[in-house]
Image (cartoon, rainbow, N blue to C red):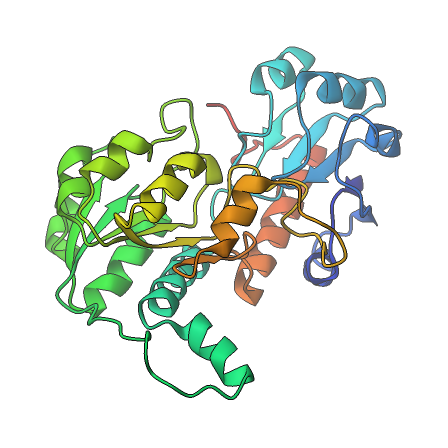
Length: 331
C-alpha cells in the first residue's frame, strides 16, 4: 500500500526502512507537517502516517478523504490532534501506536530529575567556561523522598519501578484503581489532593483529555509542598504554563523538568537557531536556571523507534487486508 509519511526526520526514516522489510509498503516520506496547506500532497495515497503535531482537524480530514485517503495511521500513542468525530463521519479509521517503549519515556523523566537535582546542566555549562567551582550545585538524596505519580499506565508504572529502586516512597493517582501496585511496588494510591500536598517530586504520565487540561494549575501549585520538583514527559497542556512561571518566580516550585510544552507546535523538532522565538512564555521558562526543557524527545530511543515503525506498518497491513484493527482509536 502507498503511504504518505508526513513530518519525517532521518532517524524515523531509518527505522521505517528497516521495519518495512517485513511489510513491503510503498513509503513516500514528506518533510512538511500535514496542514490545510500541505494536504494536497496526500492525493492518491490510501493512507497517511502522521505524528503528534500534524493537523487532523475536521477540515483537513475532509480534504484527505476527498483526495482518496481512507486510513489515518498515527505513529504516536496520543491522538488529541485528531477530530475523531469527523473521522468517524467520513468512515476513516484512526489507528495508533498504543505502546512503543514505556521505559524510554520513564527513563527520560528520571534523567530530567537527576539533572535538575544535581545541577548537571549548569555544571556542564560552567565547565565549558573552565569554571569548576561547586557553589550553587548542591542537590539532595533522592533516596527516601516521596514521589507522586499522576497516571499509572505503562509509563507511570515504569517510572514507579525506577523510583522504587532509588528507595523512594511512592504515591499514585489514577482514575482507575490498581491494587496490584501496592504489592508489586509498595505504591499507595491516593487522591489527587493528597498526592500534591505530600510529594517531594511530582511526575505526570497522564493523557491529555478535557478533564486533564491544565490539571496542574495555580490551585494545584498552591497545594504542593514548597521546593517540589515537577516533571512532565506526557502532554504539555497538562500544565498551565503561566501558573508554572508564577510558581517558579515565587520560589514555591523548586524545579521543573519539561519534555513537553503546551504551545510546542512549530517550535519543537525545528532548528530555530537563527530566529527570534516569538513565544514569550516559552522564552521566560527557558530563562530560569531551575527549569530544564527538552524538545519532546522522551520517546527517542532505538527500541522505541523500531516499535513505532513496526506497529504503524502492521496497522496499515491489517487495514489493507481487511483484518481487525486492534489499535484503532474508538474512544
